Image (tube, rainbow, N blue to C red; front, side, top):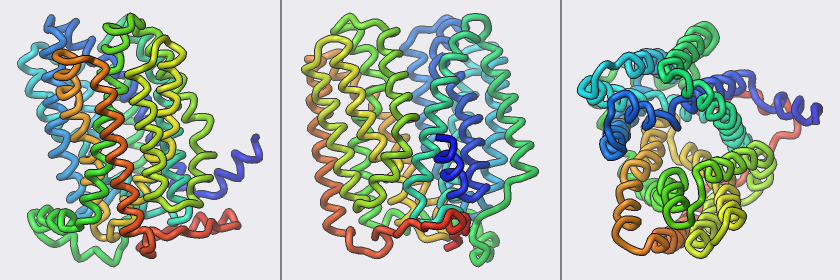
Length: 422
């Protein structure tokens, strides 16, 4: 086991592991807060869940704008500056949330933080695309998912213990972690943006921002993004609507729901790297369709399932789907993107996640409140089937193109250390 870990470490450049550790520590800070933020709002400010939901929706909405700005800024000023800014702002925003004295101030903060909280997301994805050889991207993105799930397991457990004593302590710890990471990366993180595009740094920012029109003219990329949005609209229900559905329709406690999610996180930690190494030998669009079929089966089964064990099986199938699709869709997105536009392409990729998170809860609420609750999962299965068909069409359309062709994996560990700069 130790030998396998050493071999895996040697297969990737040192900078990749710096980013993985950064994402792990930063994710611990965010998972300390995320599950308990609605509790904090309702308890401190004495408002109901409806108003808390509005605040979270506002944050997601402005996060869409912030991510688009971040993509253009990443291409204009480089990855390093945006990552450092994102960590610095994360520390300041956590302190501001923890010290907010009224709900009116919180609304203002939600807008500002929502606008800037996702601004560094495209920079991380662009930097990973810069440094990972094409043959290692599938596995590399899988490793970042393992890091996040490790953080999810530790962060949520630790956050619950801390929140029982002090919500303010959660914000202070998150701010401290972000600040320490910023100082460390300031000292050790190099810029990875390809140098032969330095002339773009002198163009007006508005011109850089207008570069999104070229991304949106990439019809194949738009189709890829929309197909992903459809399945993610369904996938997001696992973290909001499912908890309410299990409680109200099947009388399954939040504690049991938490155990199901913990099992899913452990599943990713144990099997993600193996799955990533296996599926890199198959066409990527076909793998996206295959993984989405697991979503279709898992979510459709929720409408028929009874009891904790069957619902756990449903989430297990969904998690298999995410282990196949989530690293693969990031690899595909990077292969679509020209080097000088990676930030903006990855911002549109991020939009494909943020828009379902913004619209999904409200759409699901309408169904759960006004129709047969099982209908939500039947419709979800149908949408996932449509998404899988979309990915198969993309396979027929683009699968033979060189940029999406399978790349032989280097046999020498040192080969993975070479930086890809195009």
